[in-house]
Length: 556
Figure 1 (cartoon, rainbow, N blue to C red):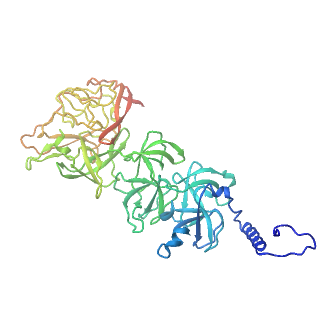
Figure 2 (tube, one colour):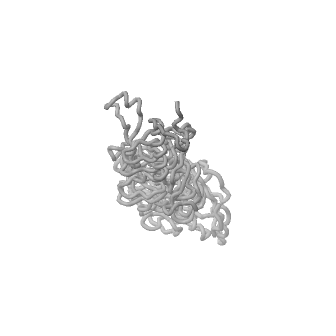
Figure 3 (cartoon, one colour):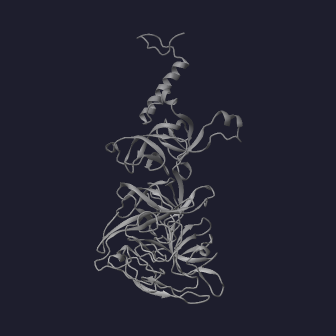
């Protein structure tokens, strides 16, 4: 048998064969492929390292090698021919869409015109073109209606290597090695059902699941509004316009867009109408560190929240309350937020020493103006469960800078002896007690020491009877001392037997011994900084304020 692939000698007669002609045609196809930018066919060694799939290009354009196609349906359906469906498992490739193809796409290993079949990488390490939004991004995912590249993000499939920024093309695209295939656990898909866009790494309020019949498990959400709840998530690296799809960070560690300067340990929360998080608002995350301008690495934070009652809360009933945020080292009402509903589903009212009995109905209730700690109750609407009550007025630390801060005789903290008010954001009640300046560690619930009205899960040990009337220290219409000024206002509550007011027998000062000093208070002061829930336990953290002659010198 003659060798059709050998070279002929000058003058030798050529006898063409089918094998020779087919070989020439394959060579011509190879050269044509190189001219169209497809590059060489994948070698057998590469084929053994990746999972291949046969893809038919049904997108509206020809595709080059290393383009991305979303997986639609099998080429051959079992209803057409079960035997062919089992033996030939090719798929139809379409333009990628975030709504459908974040984990269901292939990378072509050869070019494919419209309607052509091509081999593609389904699972494995493969070169792709990528648009790097931030150099610190370590993952990548598809972009809707762009089959030419992937886009970098903090969730998706891992970027094993990327080319230097100097080698980007004019469109900001460079080469990278990506490991694709399988699930990407930290990558979630959501749809913006609001009217405003959500920017890169911004918060959005999760509003539901399955509003789209074709995507029953996809989260829907919108830019944070006037109702605060725990159901927030963080967008990925792409802007998501209204009524469009995007990816979000389904992880405990999140990269968040923030406003202002932040430090590790800061608690950040969204401002109504904005997706960026700032200090001073109900927190959704705690900062671990800064990674870029305006972007911080944080851990998702689901604390209890502080509220102030705007109407009496009766046992086993509901009442309206407004959420409170940080104001300096204390708390103040946030008027930006709508009123929320707080319910006594845990029967906390009956267990609280602050409860007052209604003379007409005999029911116990917590008077309006009191502070409380509540947790979110998952269910229809924005509903919070009351967990602990406090008669504190959430005064800021600056109220201690005047040295001896005596309170009026009709005080919101009732005591049978001298009572010191050296806490910010706490109420301290006991029979003859003092808040020692050297106190550290968690509050104790013994009768002779300062007791936090939240954070430790215990209530104030007030010596008030259920029929007493109270006077509360207020600042402004919300009844909180956010900036340290002290003004008094009083309000009487219903009484079933008598109207006896609890009065302090001595002046209440910020001194550890309960006595004032002309030079002002000097020493450390422990304050509760944050309260949160882990399982069924309420936990808190503290900060120490160091005073000298009534002036705040430092915070540890």
